[in-house]
Length: 300
Image (tube, rainbow, N blue to C red):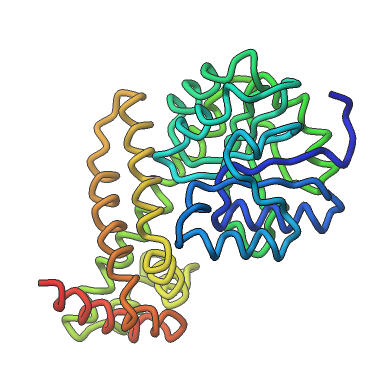
């Protein structure tokens, strides 16, 4: 496949990440973009298809249709579905396209996916290491694997921001999954700490006291941000943390803290769907915590 700055791009999975990257690539001048999502045939997929129409993306009729005559595939599905996504296209690939696996899964899962696609696609282990908005396709990426250096010039022509971290598949995933132990773990601790403080009537006192140990951090802003992210994306974060747990097990570590984070993130993801919680997500920690407490009591 000759290198050019207008490759044919296919998305398997067209949720938030897929839509963000696709819209950015369209603005970079990429005209031939196709997408498939397993939700397309059902009512829940209407919103996804509307986004595709808005961005000028061809809505495929199947995974096989999406990767027909493609140069570059971006797999952006739920963590649990990453291997199945590769299986859905493996028998339909021609021309040895690149396969960018941006899913938040363990190194072992990435290696299994690369093995599945061996000889059919040039697999690239990709880790997204910042929120996908507002940077979209310019969000910082880590990439790894035997094809990482080869694909780098093409991705950079598309204005994508990336760092090659190694030639071994799973190296980018390892960095992402292990850093998530801290990032998502701090989110869960923030919620637990501040929710307890709010219920005890000492929210402001606890917030101020954290400055004693972490004088450079603004815990008011940290709490606002972390609680909102959990409420908005807790279920997805829980799934990602299950992959962090798998990563630790692959390394011979018992993921005690990670498993607790999974539970707290998943619980918050459920509570975050309630309208009384959603209505407070821009109102600061005190309002959010009150709504979360009320929503939790309603469940019990």
